[in-house]
Length: 307
Ligand code: ZN
Image (tube, rainbow, N blue to C red; front, side, top):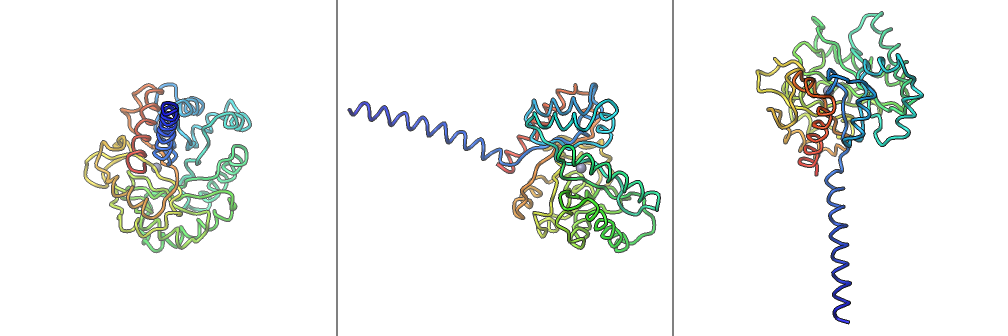
């Protein structure tokens, strides 16, 4: 009798340990992970379909689809085929990258933006894509920050209305000296003033670092307004001097990941963490090795900072 109770007890203990182990794994992987197609863009054999298959294989939850990769795919395939692929796989589309240069455009430029948005809406409807990321124009001369802000607010309200409430627009400030919106604080002021539920911000850690965006600004933000989180690192070079080719795997450079991650947790950010690299050395890897490595570093990062 005593022996059988012990036996039951041991069984319960074993089951509990297995259950706890599973719970820990699940808790650790609470944050979903994404892959931005820039990461393997120039690897031999890269294509949208190759990225999809590898991302599925190595456990990404989401993919950010690049405009050029999608347009290349559509030369020989259809959106219906793409929708079918997503319908039969675990991987899902997260965002469209990128609606280029939404602000400070002339009439012909605005027309281009409109046409691109029409295309994105078609894609969205076909494959269930719910967000587009947009980047600001660079090389704008002789405009004050407030003039830039005012015009960007107007453009984003226009686009917010155009895409409708089922589609989100995420403004990605770019950490380059000549980019018209190049710091988190400026981008956040714009998005706040736009004041639409479907307009928010992409926080790319490389861009955040490069133009000295301030953690105080991030800590003062509403976490629900951070729509996308681009993960990478940056070489230890003078601030503002780096091109995208100086990006590194997270943890290998000088970006203050701890500060950014802590701030994001503090403000209640609850989105996807998406790896985005543009490094020639990573393009020299095989396509599979690149995505395998990208998945590993993203999982490790999320477990470390958000586990
Ligand atoms: Zn980015």
